[in-house]
Length: 141
Image (cartoon, rainbow, N blue to C red):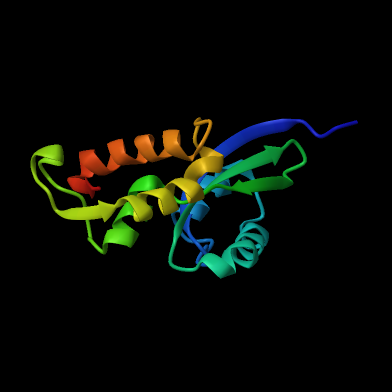
């Protein structure tokens, strides 16, 4: 008989740096998950992406075992990483804080494509360009 999923939890954790302390402990502790086991498996799976913040979707089963799926980093995180800014504009699209080239935009789109509901890279680029615009990042041709 297949295990039944009792809970699904989504959390964003820095790659390779999960510890049983908050935020991981406060989210997974009440679900009855072995925190040290989760942290070890997560850190091993993400050690090649250290420095990135990765969303993770954790499926917890009725016997307190778990599986997790690591997603691609958030679009805003990737835009900030590529442009080198600390945060987006306070005034949104009304204030420009950085610029992205089409090549950089395509690079981010190729990374995010698997997690976006877009058919191809061109559609993904438009989605990411919208996020960039709202962050005050201008796209140059």
